[in-house]
Length: 383
Image 1 (cartoon, rainbow, N blue to C red):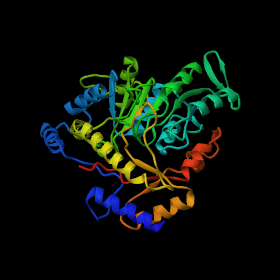
Image 2: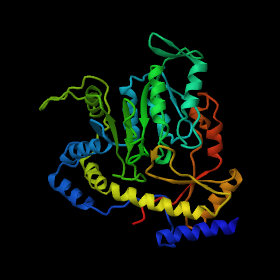
Image 3: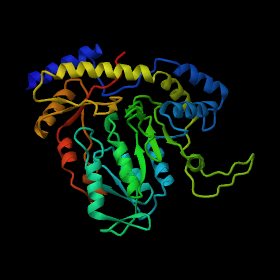
Image 4: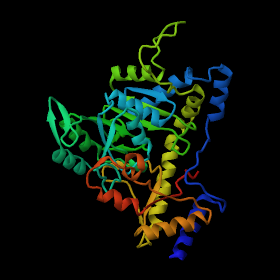
């Protein structure tokens, strides 16, 4: 087996034309990044107000097909505000998936709400609509157009599916279930910029969606996030909440509610405008990389390469393989990371973290299966 692992390392080094340490996913700055940064610096508008913020919001909304986009300091902040826009508050509950980055549940916690975990689908690694519907039918009832959890007697206000590694979940069916049960759909699209489901961009199926531009994302400004919505009222409220709830005035400082300093600096937006110009090139490179991986792993009976789900066009943000069991996964991680190729396991399930261990859960068979087998391998854009 170790011979196979060495062959994988050799193949990856050939793909990226290097024998130096290879990170999992490094950013590429090959366009107008320095030009726009210099323009931003010369303008002296480097903080939360500036032309690049406005330009990025407009161009991002156009790309994903939403009416409005509101830039934020990071993806977690975007998701936090998205949940507030869904009227999630203290003592409410939010259904999500256990197989996700911790930011998904952190944002829920910031509102004072509590998470509920339902299983994922093996073919998407995202929330399973069947698991969602089963949980609701077994545990909930509708009272006065509200979804009431019969176990806790609390209101389930929102549902937050996440498009794992950029692979769209069955978001249209999830949307239908949420509508039936009077639950607001908030899409965690942090990883799925450039991903489409049934020719519609992720993040635009729910009432509100959130994206991330962390340093390891497909495009980045070092940090950064964005909220998208088609609802003008929600868009205005999102902008208000993220700008410290300041009432517009030429010189007065009046704030009419608890707000958040979640504004994206113009410097970051300048980077993102340039990165957005390269997105299609990045996506094309990732799909070429995927094809090479698919061809390579065809000869490996004990390793499955994860490809996009049915009806989806994935951005392949992080490439993923499935090993036979946890022991093989751990051996692979040890071998690759000690031989100059960064690989990583999928996240520990959120319901197993100390702060969420008491959360209500449905049956999590698929999430447990994936947790023991999934490994991310080199995924950076190879130009």
